[in-house]
Length: 495
Image (cartoon, rainbow, N blue to C red; front, side, top):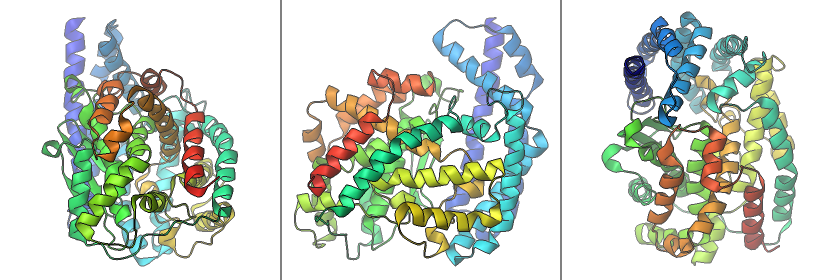
């Protein structure tokens, strides 16, 4: 039995190492790859996916799995993850897996160019291909599985194991009334925090973003920060890389994108080193992953005490910029306005952005919405939800990279992450009575240690809900997030 388990784990470790190589190809494509290398990179990604698919569906894996029945917690978790990957790989033909890798690699560059040129029509044929391939994959995964034949559920389950589209829809329906009511009270308030104005040098923004990354626990000896069109985090263990983006008129875009991605990176760097390059050696789900980025970005990074510290840092680096005191700066950082861009959205509107994407992609995968009608459906829904007409595609359906690379089922995990972050922050505050004093000093050590000890070090040892429940001491729910939002913005806007 021990020899069989060792053989299974040796195979899994090598597969995990190759997955990291594939991830590095994707990182390079977003940051450093020459523009004309896109077609070649697509072939490279397809070839790598072919190798990985063959390893995941190797008959030897099935044979080893039939002979192991571990009782120890870590071994049971490792085997469960390998079994899940094996069963998934058997359902998706190698041809389809490779074609998805090739097309999505090419699609990413086509999306970026279409976004830069505000040219939706140049992207639609490629998106048609991606949607058709992902529908085929979803149907293959759903066949005979727990998803009960629902292809969207099968794709969602890939990012948030155990979650279904119906459960997400019910959760969003429960969230929406209090979010909308809060937004209406804020917009009706006579208090109108000023927007940040001025020019903030790119080099100074990057230097400050590096400082913030280290404050939030990013180990630069095992990572690096680059720039990309869409900020992201890539890698695990001892090689975890993040990107940010710079707009000289909007330093918050750079600074809070960096904090957000640092939350993801600190999770990966914080996983127990014994799990490195094993099936449980990374985040357990995208929802739990997002909880780490959102608690860093929002509950900690946009808190009154931390923004007081950040105000001083920005004045030291940029000089006077029109905001006169820390309290005004706190309100500006948390200013609520119905903007176009999800990643730049305030905490009140953010989940409404996610709900829009969830409904549209679910309709796309179910065949109730065509790619040709996607832009008009997006624009109509945005006007209804935000009261603002979309002015250009880069502020509408072209703003996110996710659909171009086939990440259908991913968007709901952002709101799950917000819910989880609300629960975690409630527990963190209870355990760290000196938190506000630390934040006001730009000191995140105790909070980073709490998150590492209670959540990050476990990797994928437990399931998503169990991971959050163990960290918080109670089942995750929407209540803590909504209570936090209402208290915070009630104080800022005077109600």
